[in-house]
Image 1 (cartoon, one colour):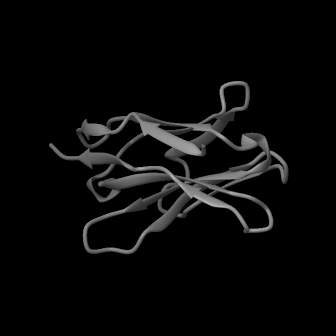
Image 2 (image 1 turned 90 degrees about the vertical axis):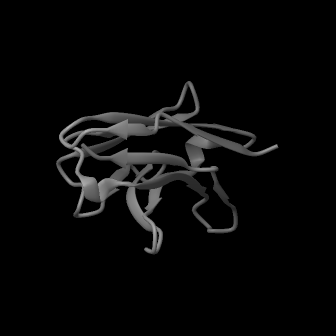
Length: 118
């Protein structure tokens, strides 16, 4: 059974930090591109960051470059999103996504709420 379980969201003040975690099970984690997406109220879901061990890359949305870092612990089947210098516009539900290279298989987590507010 495939599962993606996110954690680490919460309420933080502007300028603060959070680390999101996504632990995967039920598929070959290291072979998948792992991504974080977010969706704010009234907006479309957008890609925040992605990592691929197979292809050897990480990439980021322009809006988070220099503030967010995506990383993977392949022994723990977990991908992280370290978020620093958070801004109110980072407020959204953050989703973990797993996608194989062919695009045949695509899995989503349940989402975790991040709220940046004073």
